[in-house]
Length: 107
Image (tube, rainbow, N blue to C red):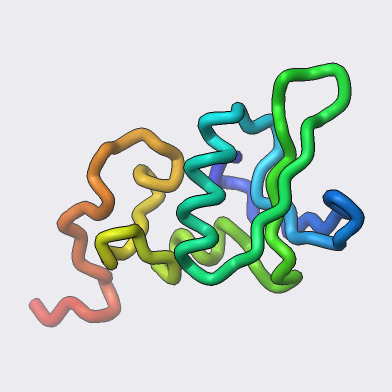
């Protein structure tokens, strides 16, 4: 899922209403998201999408929105560092980048 669409989607996954984290995810992507989200205390549900080899992933926390949580740096990696958008999208191997939040910078 790209991080440029902030719409909050709620759907039923495996009989439970969930906040949708991503649709069209590969099996490897599901594993990555499941580990990351469970580490952050979320209950993750996933289901195969019909007629494709992709999956829909969601969490049972109805308030969770991946765009908000990634950009507000609410998620932590396994090493305890804040998750960046590049890490979430699996574009970077780094768990975090040296980045100063503009609201804490005193330059």
